[in-house]
Figure 1 (cartoon, helix red, strand yellow):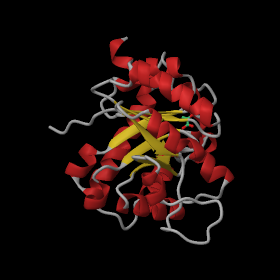
Figure 2: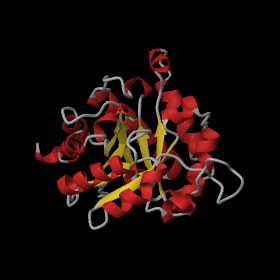
Figure 3: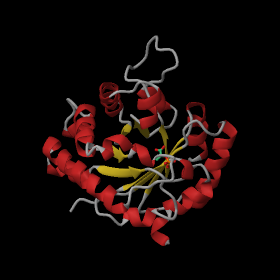
Figure 4: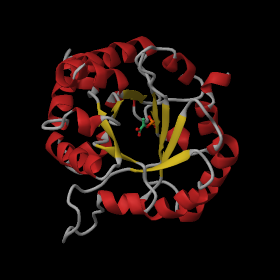
Length: 254
Ligand code: PEP
């Protein structure tokens, strides 16, 4: 039987300067630094990556970036490469977040390039996919997700994708306080796992962690995590406060 270690990941977006980030990381280390049976990751802003990874040394909490470029280096003002993220202490990178797709022109093609570059550098990609409210209402949820999944992983196969993480984030649930019900999320996660099985084979698909993201809080995490295909959460707003995020991380002890 494949066991998927749950991953609870915090996306700090464009919040917290370096000292605020280190302060929150220090507190999280006290509250959740030794937690076992669940992996924990936080994704601060670029300038805070290295200091936060230093602050978290000696704990089990990993650091991730919120974005990257697919080239190794070059004249790409404002960008950062996978190797630079690894050197700054990152283990994970969030790719294709809906805010990047909406405000910064991220497409399934750039997501694909970034995932290929991340896995080549041993950085674990968390590939975000999700439908808008309009697409859900039009009954397009599954076709939208199918396309995002296929295009995002185009040309990439089992060996490269051993550690891949998918985050299903319905756009209508991000930062809105609206959460997909655990049944709605499970239905989509099961669909994604069956598509991954078709694309990559059963043994890889069984091991891929599929996170849910969208207004996850201490109050709804246990119910979501009780679903068989929900393997963790990508948490925005509720990850900014160490106490609140720690309650999410400790969902099993509630
Ligand atoms: C996110 O940004 O990935 C997210 C899920 O945000 P929130 O938890 O605030 O809805």
